[in-house]
Structures are given as C-alpha cells and as structure tokens.
Image (cartoon, rainbow, N blue to C red; front, side, top):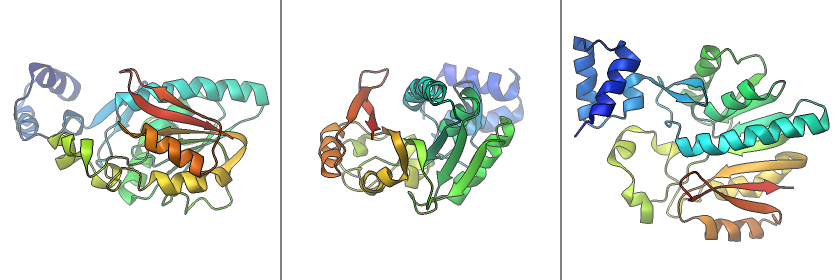
Length: 253
C-alpha cells in the first residue's frame, strides 16, 4: 500500500523524534500493509488531549472533534445558568475522547464514560490517567443503557456504531475495515441497529431539560427524522459538520 511522505514524516517525528531507527523501519512496514498511522504511532490528539490507542479502540475522527467542541460551550453555559455541576454521559465511549474533553474543558462537570467492550473500558481508564482526569470521572460497563439503571444525566453524548452493511458501508476504507474494531463500526443493514434502541430508551435517562447529542452516518438523516417522530421526540435539530455533511443532531426534552 502506498504511504505518503506526510505519513512517513509524522511517524518519524511523533514516535521517533525524527530519528529513523530500525524500529522505525518496522513501523513503516506496518503502514505499508495498511495499518492506520494512529495505531502505529500509538495515540492521537483530540482537542488538546493525548488519546492513547494501545487497546485498539475506534480512532477518534475530526468530525467528532468538531461537534464535541460545540457541545463544550453549551455545557459551560448551562452550568453557569443552573449554578450547579452537571452530570454528563459519554455513551459508546470507545477511547473516551468525548468524555475526556468534557472533563478537561468543563470544570466541576461529573462524567460517566460507558461502553460494552472490556478493552474499551481499560483504554478509557488509561486515557483518564494519562490526562490526569480521573477525579470527576466514572467508568461503567454498559450495553447501551443496561449498566446505568436509576441514573439520569443533564447531557447524553453518543457516538454509536452506525455503518450499514449495504450502501455506503461497502465504500468504507479497507484500512478501517481491516484494523478498526468491527463492533464500533457496523450496525446492521441500515446502520441503525444500535441507534433504534438507544432512542427508544434515552429519554428516561435524561434529567428535566436534558439534551442528547448524537453522531450519525452519511445518508441517515431522513430515516432518523422518522425514527425520532416514532419515539415522540419533537424538539430536535440536525447539524452539519465542518465538511457540510449532516453528521450529528441535538435532541432537547
């Protein structure tokens, strides 16, 4: 597989301080087989945080970084209005990048980071330690909401699996298909296998005037609008990412 000069330079600089040692040559071979650069380097930056990828979670995307940055200002504004710490859920947390960003930039906010995958939970705990953000964080094992009984949140931030087995899912990059965790990507024939039960259950885990931020995939806006109405959500808005693609939505209760 072709490896760009930019990737070679990034690997040399970020992992080897510019020195192309024998270990560097081994890693270059990994890139040539198609392994993602972020896995080879071992971490990725996300809103100023170092997100370790040792346990192979989904690699954080810049589209996710875009909407996460948007929600941080909303959380801080709501905290000022209410005069109390907010409780935020990072669901389908993966590497923990979203929840960690909330912890770093929203003082006093309490964050629960939840995922069903044991490797992801281990990864989240490691990233909390690396970034010195363990104090107001709780890590929970949860299959959607199964491990969060009797809890309610001011904000639910969700980046679930949403790639469909048909349509644009067939165009997914080979490097993603071969190396990133399947359970964090695929969500049935329409890409909504996880989102459907999530939306059905989410309302009862929200505090009064709570909000949901949900990332979704290309071409899913129409199906999601129908799904929202089926589940009696009336106050919602779809949002464009930095590439002018419908990528996330906000639900208010």
